[in-house]
Image (cartoon, rainbow, N blue to C red; front, side, top):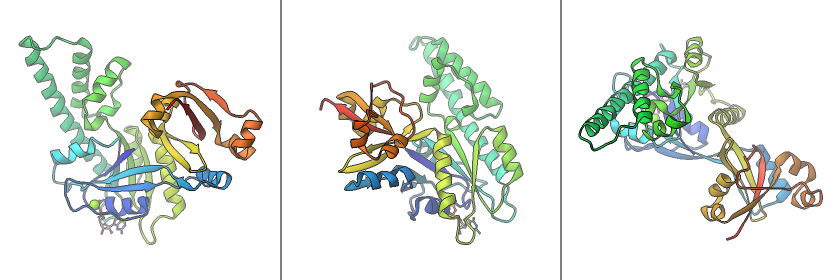
Length: 321
Ligand SMILES: Nc1nc2c(ncn2[C@@H]2O[C@H](COP(=O)(O)OP(=O)(O)O)[C@@H](O)[C@H]2O)c(=O)[nH]1
Ligand SMILES: [Mg+2]
C-alpha cells in the first residue's frame, strides 16, 4: 500500500517520516518523493514466530512517499499532483509546533487547493465530452453526465470530493477520474499539544486526526505503534497471516476483501489456481498452539473464494499450481 506524506514545506514531513519508518531517506529531486518501506511492528507476528519458528519472518509493510511540500504562498505543481495521485492514502502533516502555527488554516488551504484543481479538471472533462457529443463522436451517458454535474456543483461549494455521496453506478466512474480531493486523507498534527480549532475542522470535514510530538527525544515507540494501528484501522486495512516453516508473513488487506483477493496478494498464480482456503484465526491458533493441534481439533475451516477475510486470520491456500 502506498501512502503519501504531504503538507506545506517545513511542517515536519521528512522528520516525521523518519520517525514513522525508523530510518531516514531524503530525496533531492523536487518531483520524486523519498520512498521509505516501513516494516510495521506486529505483536501477533511476534507470537507466530514463537509458535512456528520459521526460517524467515516478514512483517507487514507500508510504503511511505515523502513529498516535497509547497511553500504556503505557492501552488502545487502539476507533476507533484500526478505523483500524489499514485498513492492510495494521503497523510496531511500539519505544523503544530512553530511560533504562530495554525494547523486548521493550513488544512483548509491545502484542501481548498485540491478542490480548485479538481474543479478545473471536472470543468474541462465536461467541456470535452460536450464537444464530442455535439460532434457525434460520443454518445450521451446519463449516469456519467449526471455524476460529473453533481461533482462540479459539489466542488463549486468548496467541498472536497471525498464527501460527495455516490451510488454504485457512479462510484467506479468517479474513482477512475483520478481527482485529488477524492482521495482518502488522514491528518497528522506535528506538535506538543492538541489544537481545538483543528479538532473542530477535522470533525466538520469527517477526517481522522492523530498527533505526534517530535520535540526532545520524539515520540516513544508505543506512540508510533499506536499511530500505525490507528492508521491501518481508519484506512480500512486488516492483517492476515501465512504461517509456514520457511516463511511466516503478515499481509495487509482491505477490510471485507475475499480469500481470493488475499491469495492474489500472495501470488497471482496462487489466485489463479485457487481451490480452497484453510482458515483459522490467530486467537484460536495461539490457544491451540500450532497447525498440528488445529488439525487434531478440527479447527481449520475450509473456505471458498468469496470468504471475507477477518483481521487476524491465518490462511493456507490450496491451489492447483
Ligand atoms: N521544534 C521542532 N522542530 C521540528 C519539528 N518537526 C520538524 N522540525 C524541524 O523543522 C524543520 C523542517 O522539518 P522537515 O521535516 O524537513 O519539514 P518538511 O519540509 O515538511 O519535510 C527541520 O529543521 C526540523 O528539524 C517539531 O515537532 N518540533
Ligand atoms: Mg521534506
